[in-house]
Length: 135
Image (cartoon, rainbow, N blue to C red; front, side, top):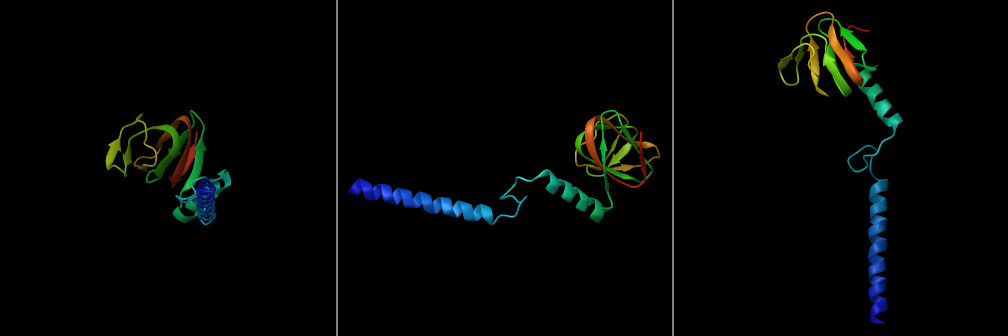
């Protein structure tokens, strides 16, 4: 009889714990720390929101393509790998980056000379604000 009560008590605790986990998961906002898995459409929507709110445009560069900017443009590489095509100012770290150097992900770069930009070492996604062209 004692074993049966013990089993029922453990089973009840498991049921209560499981129900609490389901309620917690159901009440989390998608994409929050409590529910970090997101869909591609969610990420695409967030990128569009950033473009609208900040003035930045999202550009995807395939390997070997160049983003050539006007003086005063701002560039942020958010994924992939790229190198500078001329000297640029890393506003995030407060340093100058020489031509041909790898750019850091999520750093804000200021283009100080027309024709400077980034060249994709491998496919990358870039936010750019200001005048630019692709080559």
